[in-house]
Image (cartoon, rainbow, N blue to C red):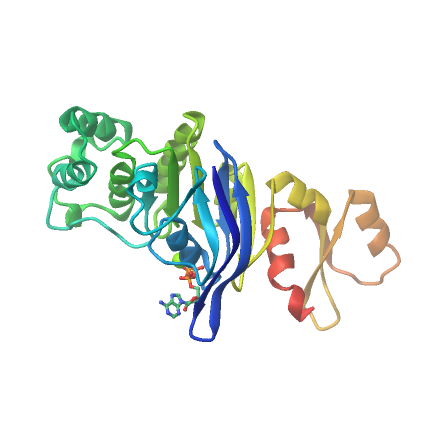
Length: 278
Ligand SMILES: Nc1ncnc2c1ncn2[C@@H]1O[C@H](COP(=O)(O)OP(=O)(O)OP(=O)(O)O)[C@@H](O)[C@H]1O
Ligand SMILES: [Mg+2]
């Protein structure tokens, strides 16, 4: 569904995205995980044709992506990192604007449907600027879905949103997945990717580490983590394929303070981002 081949983006001498290749299948829910400045937004902006790669090519549905490729743009919905709502307009007016952009014929019905799907009935005639962060984000998702796209890009859709708001957005994303949509989401909430995504991809300093399922990434590291304090009272982590191997390791070490627990996707990520300093 989406293929990017050796894509880089350079700003001056700095590579924000560095030689990234990736295949995303139809119906996949991919989480792009990375810390601040990793290159997530830059990569998304290239996917959606907002930024031109310095090198490399992006294909969406076998068509080359570019700024003016309207045929491809109709297939994608975008929820950007920062708000794209007109704050002075109501929810309904914002959606009318989006629907007209895509020349949706029966737009009134479509807007009603999307408002109900996103549970926005109570906010229809409220100005966007008076809505909570979580509700604004749901309006942004409604706007992205107005033309019923096959592929949805979401750049940190739950950042700064409380638990209830986040759960609501998670439910909507899960439903979209069951509808067969292809979804790419960036986040630095690792548990979000672990919960939602069937594939995750770790990105740091513009480079992609690996795309795999959360389960496989944890298995490859070792499904049990031994967490202990070293002599300088620094926390250290070691990974084992079973609990006994971890227990065997600490046996005989005097006065060691430790816990053995299940490895999380956060451990995988920590191991990946801290590799160079080890
Ligand atoms: N237009 C630009 N000019 C120069 N540098 C840029 C530009 N856009 C992004 N960068 C740099 O590229 C790097 C990657 O930025 P990007 O916004 O893609 O990161 P991100 O992973 O989305 O981070 P965050 O989690 O903070 O949103 C950063 O170091 C950023 O400062
Ligand atoms: Mg970003």
